Length: 492
Image (cartoon, rainbow, N blue to C red; front, side):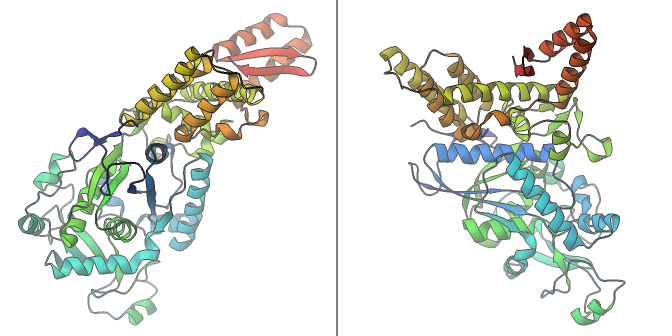
């Protein structure tokens, strides 16, 4: 059995994975991934992170580990200032979306949660044991704030209850913000300072909806001040800060210390350091052993963002005629810690490669009469299996794993053994190869349009123009075969 190595963001080193419960096969692993804030559709950058987390989960299972996987769904509207490094400022995201769409925040959360779950399935991501919703764990969050209050790690100001980062450092002997690679969080400088805070690094645990001392009932009667989402607490009517939900829910289901916490590199800067501080402040124990972060996705070499109009969704992918699993294939072509540049051409290439792989699987699936393996071919099968395992166990090196897969596809290993290899590899890659049928072979809309145009030219007898389109199709990775039933297009 090959050892698993993971780059731990906390140590900034590649480390051998040794779970808290023991080193060998069948040891239990607790894993948590920060999921979406459901005020809008999740975009393809978000899903790169979720796919990397999915690969990690599959690699653990491929190596024989039993894993309990939890992902949160932030269906409480945390504030938009977190984009600037301060989640205690700005406008409530869910309320903003509700105003825009003429709905309640509850309606917004339900709609976009369902949209996320649908896209999650389309990318063949393994469902966690639980999608833990913040709104269903308000009491757990209140209880955790109370634990911190008992340890004198909180203080109250006009707009809420805050975590005292300096007091945490003094009482724990630990440095706040070690996980982050932003100097500003370690030094205490934030973009927008609240003058009432004791320290600019301090963050909200519970935010007030109303003036201190107002009763819950009277506040509820005041429609002009009523928030869509608010709860009564020992400190007043309000709602939880963004960071507290992940600590409360992960510790409820995985214990006060667990193995792996995954997420995108953006939330490595403030959200995850705050999780560590409040969790370890409450328990006095190490919160998480391994922190795994996925690098941002770029689009056409630029930063991705809604304001730039390039924050594409799974729906956008499908509208252009692509299979969502082609996007998953594209994710696999780059290491999760390397920048991946999304372009429509790169997605077309991934669709072509996936379709070509599917055609191989279909042809292998029809093979029969398993041949007796020669010693040479038996060694090849063992070598492919070993190299694939070593690749995915080496910090989830999916580009190298894909290279091994294609070597196996092109080898002279007998069809049935080759098919078994591909099914084994797909336990990690998650491309759904075991469910492939001819109807699954997807042709991008752009290619379909070119084929129709070629048929028009052929019908008019303009074979020169038709041949030019044939060459264009081949340049884009497709062969056209003219049959009695019309043109048949296959990936090169």
